[in-house]
Image (cartoon, rainbow, N blue to C red; front, side, top):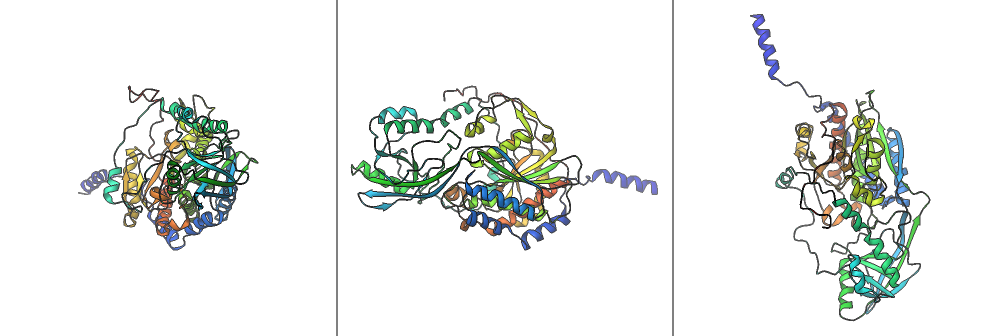
Length: 531
C-alpha cells in the first residue's frame, strides 16, 4: 500500500508544473507597493525637472543641469557606478528671448518660437510677408527673384485641424484589444536612402533663401490651439543654417496668409536672441546601477530619455518617464540585493534620432556592417539597414530592457514586441496589478523610442502600454508640455509596476530572446527606389 501511495504521489507530481524561476516574488512586490505608494517621490522629481530645470534640449545648459542633478539623486539614493557615457552629438543651443509681431495692417503679438538650431536675428528684423510654399528643390524656380527682403512663409496654409474627438482619452478594453495583433515585418532596403535624401532639403532651402536675400522664414504649427513646437534638426557642427527661422501658431500663420492673399502686404518684426554653445560637442547618457550578486556580469535595464524640446518644460516628454525610471531606482535601492544587476539609463539625443540609446547599443552590444560614416538623423535612418550584425560579449549579459516614453498615463500593460514567448511570463508578472488597471500583454511591436535599436539586434527590449491622456493630441513636443498636465496617481502606479518588472527580471530566468537578426529578403518586389 505504501509503495502504491508513493507511486501515485510521484505520478501526480508530474502533472503539476514546476514553479517558474520567472514567477512573481510576492513578498518583495508587497514591499515595492508600500514604498511606491506610501513614500513616493516621483512627483517631486518630475517637478524639479519641469519647473526648476525646464526644457532640456540636448547639449543645452538645461540638459547639462539635468545631467548633474539626476546623477546626484542616483548617488543620494545609494546607487553605484553612477557615470556619464558620452557620444558625439553637435552644438548646444537655447533661447534667451524671442518676440514675433505683426506690425501692419495692425499690431498683434504673434504666438511663435524660434526653430531649434537656427541663428539669431541680431536685433529686430522687419519684412513684408510672402507666402511661398517650399517642399522640394523643384519649388525654388517658381520663387526665384521674388523673395528679397521678405519674411517667407514656407508652409502651405490650410483650413484648420479641429479635433473630431476629445483631446483627453483613457484606453478602453476594446482599444487595448485592437493592439493585440501580430504585424508582419516589412523590409524595404531602399527606404533608408530615400529618407536620407529628404534630410538634405533643409540645408538646400537655406542656401536658396540666402541667395534670394530673405530676412527670415516661418513655418506653420502642425496643431491648432495656439500650440507651437520649434523642432529643428541641423544640430551638427558645420550644419547650422544662416537664415533665422520661426514656427508660428496655426491661427496666426493663417491670418498672415489671408492678409497676404488679399494684397494687404502684412509686415512682421522678429527679434530672436538665441545662443549656441560649442564648448563640448559630446552629449551624455546617465548610467546608474544597483549591483547584483551574480558573478557572470548579467543585468537588466530600464531607461527613458532625459532630453526634451524647448517650447514647453519637457514635463510629459519625457520628464515623466525619467522621473518614473528614477523612482523605480529609488524604490529598488531599498529592496534586498537582486541576483542580476539592475541598471538605469537616462538617454540624451532621443529627440534627434534615439542617438543616446543607439550609442549605448554600439558601445556595449553589437557592431554592424555597412557604411558607418553617417551622423545625426541620417545615422538613425540608415542604421537598421547595415548588415551583418556582430555581437559583443555584453550582448549575452543584458537580460531585459524596459522603456517608458509616452507621457504620464498609467500603465495598462506591456507590448510583447512580436515575442510570443514572453506573453505568459508578463501576464503572470502583471497579476498583482490587475486591480490597478494593468493586465494586458499585447503582441504588437512599437517604435520611435529608445528600445528600438535593442529590439533591432535581438535583445529583449520592451515598451509599456500607457493611457494616452492628451499626450499625442496636444502635449507631445508642444508649448503645453508643462507639469500641470502630469497625473500623479498614474505616475505612482507606473513607477511601482516598473520596479516590480525589474525585480522579477533581475531574479528569474532570462527572458526568451528573439533570434539575432540577419538581413531579410525584400518584402515588396514592386517597391522601387524612386518612390
